[in-house]
Image (cartoon, rainbow over all chains, first blue to last red; front, side, top):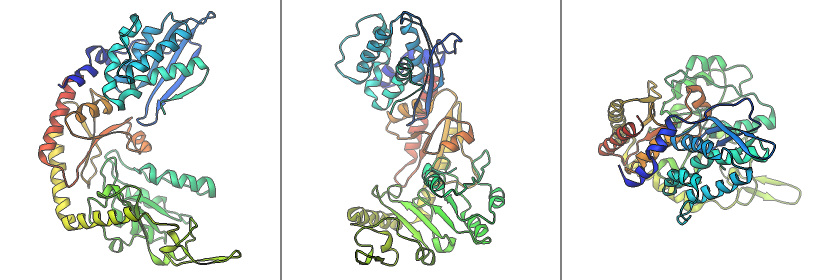
Length: 151
Length: 286
């Protein structure tokens, strides 16, 4: 297999794509949004639980999509627990840069290092929206919007 | 089974005029159901608009019977021939089609141009849909009169470059000959169906009795977009997604498919490359 494909479909991605973590709809979740990519029809629902102090206690998701979008949603739910909403926003910005810019810099912090497995989409511009769909949806949920789209 | 291009414009008309749209069902293999279609034709049916060939499945609709049954009730028929023109010899007069439309870009021609054929006795009563230069007989501030068809429908400066390009594409296809094209493409399709059937966990979507050279498929192990990315790296371009036919995807119970569409320039070697790439998809995701 070609190197850039191997970089894209790392074992971690395949694992999270097959066995997504936090694939559920917790009854206590108080932020929800539905995201979809009209170009491909993929759709995801993000359920977040934010406490009174603005800390994200839990993130879960449901939906259907390709290996990249499911793995990205799954990894997102893992790295955001315990973060404040502004930390989540900053993380999304750094992650987005990682997926789109050639010189995004080395990942600083444990969360970005974990998300680094998705950086392979940089070589596949068509797939950037797959990797960022769940994050766009989370942003919509935090902003109080019901819907998000990659377009 | 229609492309969005034969759904959305009618919904815009519906919202403006209050017409009712009735949808002809298909079976699980993607066959157009002629008898169910006939049962939908009623005294208030004003037009039948139907694709000749499905862009997503390759189904060839029995268009001659569709037209005969509509004409038995004095209903005119508009045929979307975008997918038929590159693959099938089309004689609009033998079919007795009232309207037949197709685009240039599926016929190896330029984008942004197409052909709208209509019987002259129907066109002569249609009002212009767009106003401008070239389409008028005379203009005063009180009143404008229009040229007869087809000029009445060609307001403004035409896309000259595209017209010349489309004519060259039509000459090219006619020089190859539709019999030779069909023989080449059908050979590729049946070879591809045999090769793809050997890929573990692959299912062909759309197995109608009569098909043009399209093989649409899904795999148990991988989403069509992941299939597309891997196949693309071998130099084979497949279309992945809903193929601008979301209602069809819902009918078939799939979110998306991958689709190989064979043209005059494809070869059996390329089918082999595709099949090998799909075997690696199975190895990676299976």
